[in-house]
Image (cartoon, rainbow, N blue to C red; front, side, top):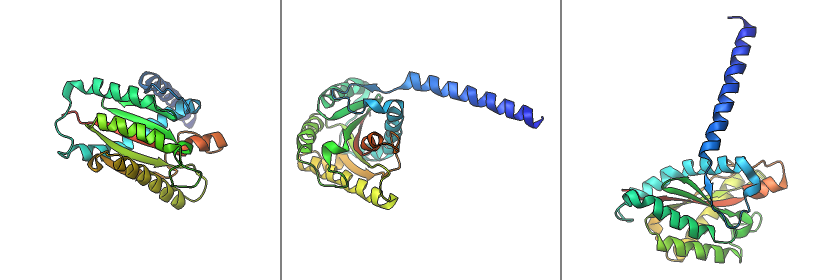
Length: 220
């Protein structure tokens, strides 16, 4: 096959793959029930990043669910169980919630709701949001919680990873202090590695400075 023909074939295949990816994204876009849609401007990039974050954290959630502490699984009732949590969590100001699977939710807190810039100390206003979230988690105990800390790309990768870990641990500690079982929660800092928007603008960096909570239910 000639070089020109190869290039033409590759271009055609690339076009087909892009169309297929677009079709899949349209069909599989997570359902959002956010009362406070602060992350809406991130668009498709935010949805893709959120789903990627959920997939990354799912292994840790499965490790928690493998233990006996959460008790028997939900079976066929998992959908309704997660629906009720989603509705209540979405009412918390400063949050948005995505349903990324039948048994998984991703709860998003903007970082400036929880932390000052470059700080891992919880802000005064954050306590009300986390108190409300804790109440929901206590009401629905059959979910594992993976706290995911994220930063923008400002600063070094080492600093960002350390900052994101400290923020995730701070949220984990706060939830435990409000009565949520420590055996249900783990914390991971992803640094700048999972952006949901471009770091080339202040708006994008603000969206990337965030803490997400991945919730996965015990099905069986």
